[in-house]
Image (cartoon, rainbow, N blue to C red; front, side, top):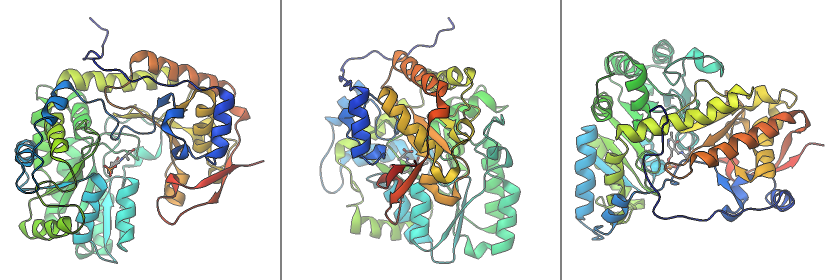
Length: 449
Ligand code: F0G
């Protein structure tokens, strides 16, 4: 059989609410055209993020009943720790309430003003946490990543030569760690090859610099390696993941993505001294080291999710269904980041709406119109999010895991194609107010007349 179906059946359903185009126009105005400011009950299909939005399995819900809510020494922590240790091989597992808490603790311990942290492409919270400490976050994607239309099997790879150049220029003592984001979210959900991780590892090892993975979508990355990288065809996803993690000295992890959890995260390291400092900070702001800002039941959900996500039937369905959305809109002429990524499809709004200049935020304009037209929420990943550091003007359609069916996605395809038909009518936006950090969450826009 060629048809790939959702590898689950649905036991519990949640109604979604329809609104009219007139209601949505008014809601947009009230929200100052910032889709983060629109209440979820007014959204029909929410593709804002794949983070914390997964449907949990019966096994996860069952495990949650076993959650040990003890303040110290919770059984649930030891169950999670065992799963993480088997998967990653890291010596220390430090639980945090979500990924950015792990980032904050890691960078607080490792980064000082004047330091430089390279990454294939930093995610916004990663960049912000580094910059908050007065250090510099540098993106080193491969050249192919600059062209959204270029096809490269591992477009999330880091430019290893550029990394060598950076180390030579600033000196290894100013680089406290190198990070690789798998998959590369800000670069289009693109995977990093095992060969690239190995090459980066060689460089960092030579200079005595620790290598960390920003690993929240590790399983999707693993599936691309199995499908595309010669030599891994007969490996199981788990074996590939085990190899990948063992090339690194530690990781930050948001459990809200590939662990199918609605909240949670952790920080891992092999460095005993760092782990001690990180644990001190953890106690100060997150919690005791056997829960770190989570409930015992959250630890259980993550432990089960980390195992479920490596099921080849799930990963095949997941990556195929994301590509389904991408192929159907690209076939009708909508420019997407090629090839389709793991968790999301990214429309190249700069290319789709060339009449809207960067400083008038073409991807924001498209996001607003898609909501107005069809009640679909997406997110701008471009100059609103990254300012003048943006590489592209992208609109991300992130697909929550195990939540929407193919007919929901068909509706999304139809809506995008209808908006594409009258793309020449779309107008730009200007920002009329913004906060100091992470402005995309709360800034206010006005349509350009
Ligand atoms: N790293 C990457 C690559 C991410 O995509 C995210 C979150 C984080 C770290 C931070 O994790 O949210 O648990 O604090 N990404 C979400 C998104 C928010 O929509 O892409 P967190």
